[in-house]
Image 1: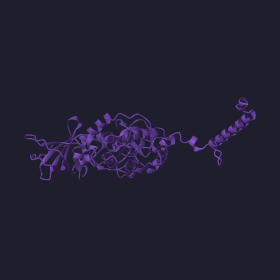
Image 2: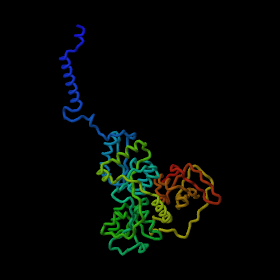
Image 3: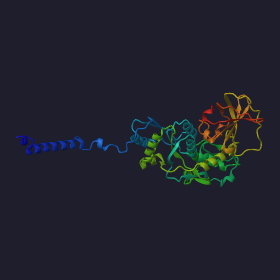
Image 4: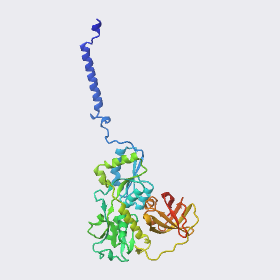
Length: 406
């Protein structure tokens, strides 16, 4: 009897097997198929590109072009980085280069589409990290051009007179200011300046300017223009990430930008490439500043050279004090590419202020230094170095030590 009771009847085994099979089948149906749509539920078909959430809750994309061109990129980044990140676009076609440099100095832009190599250099000086190249359909280097109307009697730079009107960009433009200025050494011209490329072309077409300066690619195929001068190579601009972003956030954003669909990259005008070499371009721009140190753009004609006469400098200030406020009345480039400003204090005493191009790019409204002429500066936290029988020196080692007041 005992042995008979310990054996399981075959019928019971079959029944239990059938129940187990049906239960497993039901579980599979429940897990793999949505009863409403018949599709595999999201728990199995989730976004394969889902990335770690960013530490930053806000991202600002800085641009100098049409904001609408970056809207598809914003929507894509939200998909990749999570809806918890608020992404805004700052800037437009009217954004001046100086405004852009100010925002980079303050690290207001998290992702910077620099558009100009001058703005790229400013980004590098402020610790921004390279991601990709703008204008990827173009060569990594380009040229500036001086151009005239097709029927203009001007054939070359040698035909320029002190009555010739030239339209230039603002002080921070590589193609419409720095590079052409380098080639204008020794000339005296009527200058109208501060324009973006499209407006410079319009001024030449309308006859309001005899000569214009712009990127060669922008004017070479226009039948109404004739090129009279091409510059040396200029490195292209790039896309940069702010140093205030954490390393993990920089990696996540970089991955998203690199993997963006080709159509989105094309609309936002960028592509993945190595950073060009800016060193020679920086040397050219600094040489241009040397040419311009004596130029006065507040009155025409503008001389692109220095005269033989020099201004005598008054007695140096011998008593240091916490804050120095004065007006810039001279600029030059000295050893190791340092910029030297001649600063006249409120009490009419004189200082030489020394600082590097990198620090200049970190000071809002300082630009390259050229636009500091006649500007009022405040200098704090620096004790002037007394120089026997010479002008006292102030060496700026931190961007926070100097402010542009107007």
